[in-house]
Image: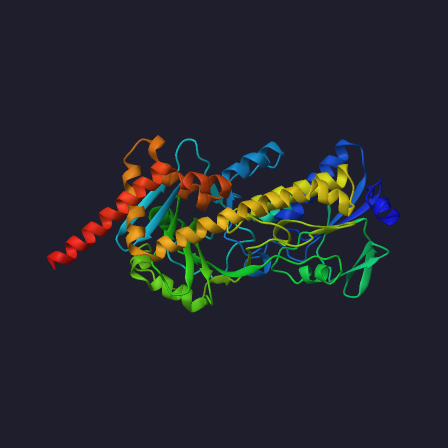
Length: 461
């Protein structure tokens, strides 16, 4: 009891040393907010980010393997924090979702009171570029989003070491960090911002603090070069979602960026051949230039996607943030990194680094994300069922087409889908709006209409 009471008041004093393991958005956000807040209250802390990647080189080895989509609401929040995102960090503003189906396309435009999204490169950009336009200039308009954030952290006073921390050990409940067998220093706080695609999470699971990393699924990200002119002409400012029922694929989309398009796929056993089959589907191939052929080599990676929540993501002098703790289901992972990093930084600087402090002031942010993800799972299960059921899918598309001809105030179904795919709104709110009685009635009427037309066509045959 006395030990618990003593540990509940652990505080960061002047000269405290903080080790942030991971220089992605979560690690950079934590560093920025912790250093800013410490400076405001006159506290002197020594913070070092450990990140072995450069974020400036091309290819997956320097990239955090993400589709690279940032919500407009997050861009606005960061601007308030003094973190200004402008082109070419922001590659393209997205204002439309295009649902591609065998029976036709449906365009879903953002309306006046909805936030949009923007695309970014997480690393130095893709490799394996093939020339698709004659006399095209090299793609020089690529600035890494992650490198920009880590530079912001440096300006706030963060040290950055390009080495890998491969061991964390507790000595009398004080963390010791090691690299290649050499002890670096005793830390007053270790921040796990290592994501879930790194072996670093295993270090924390072995510490005996009860931490268990989140459950994950595999995704497949590919970058295909078609030239900036083709991207603008053929894809514009729209993310294209393909409802084509490809075997073992739960979700497939194409996102425009600069002179590349990013192909994002979720499902079981997705391989390079799955992507090639997707690109050779007539519905998909139609979106590319007539002379374009699927390249033999293209930049690709297979990241893990957080689909659960970590258990016990904090202890005395240790806190896990971002994907290693809690993240929004399938969407807005960068936004989740912002929320968890800011909550953890505020807790550490203002309330201390004890388990009790993190439980009281940090964990509520994680629980809010986790509870919201429950409704996200329900919504994605529903949309997946609709996609696999032709009659219901056609009814949904009919509703969407009808709404696009009506005033914005009648776009109830469109706004539900827009907010689901952009990640700008909480899943809880989206779920409540999706089960609006008037919207459900309209949906059911269209299901019966589709069934009637189907039987009518069968009768004629």
